[in-house]
Picture (tube, rainbow, N blue to C red):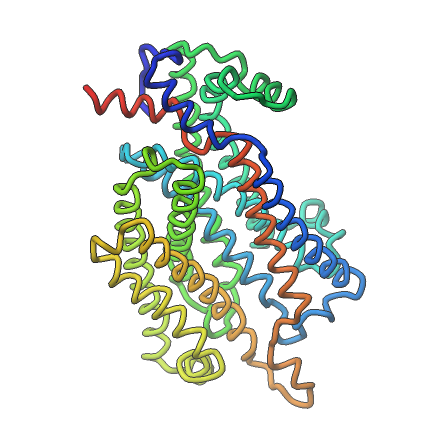
Length: 444
């Protein structure tokens, strides 16, 4: 976003061409209805699973006295992590001045809004008595990291939503006269949320200042999300969580997961929405380099996370590391490390692997590996407490997610995909005025 726009003509042929291309997929056609119908069927089944959990209690899950945090909390950490891509692409790259991120920034914010919203919902899924959620706000204590976590996640969601909506205002003003046979409610929505925008330079200057303030605010908020989330783990003396680097470890992992999710979304929108002129090969190449950079930082913290306790090798640390490296969780651990991190890092060094299809396949493995990694961060540590495990049922010691638990977890992902799908058909996924401005600057 340029600091000053002296003039902007929405009727310029170049702007009109961009608007027509970007608005072509906007609208709810039969394919969209079929897609949403498919997702709705899955969601109904998942909601029924949650109804059973609500009725019977958490006993229908694999959660017990020893492993009281399971797949739900792993899912929460994963959703929070992936949502940070909005901050990384929009704020960090935007403030540094990388202009190439403009066409994909809105897609990054889409992911940020959807995943941050569902992250809060996942916490409710983990509660046996969700009606008591209000007590966190009514009786919350400043000393509790849980109160901090709820606060920063909510704040990040609000800022991300504003970063998504504010740059939309000029686009809605451009688009409301160009939509082909829109339903009346959709035209009215565009008219209301364009706020009588007239493309006056002073309006753009106000918009720039507002967005810049939000970009500055979202960075410490995003850092707070993952440091506070890591504190929820690190304030306990459990082996596997008792670490001073858990904050940057979580944060760097979040950048990896978010970058992978953005690459997958870029590939989908580029092909399904026919946006190859705007989401170009160079964007995949640069996102590949960014993913590799964040993966390298994350790899360092992975080494640090396991090398330090392995060097000291306290009794509890030895049990935990043996379970990860050669024991019950070894398959998940090494899958996450090798297929989800090390091999992608090597492949992304090759330029041909940063082409759209290869890098998307790599990103799928990275994203799956990121989820597995959150699973092995949460469960093995809880499965090996300091308390003696004597005269208790086996199912209290060995955690296995139940079908109900898996269905509720799937429901969270389906909801996130539904939010992204609706917003991507309701509003343009490529910023019209920013891309037009970028092309104008490139032509000078």
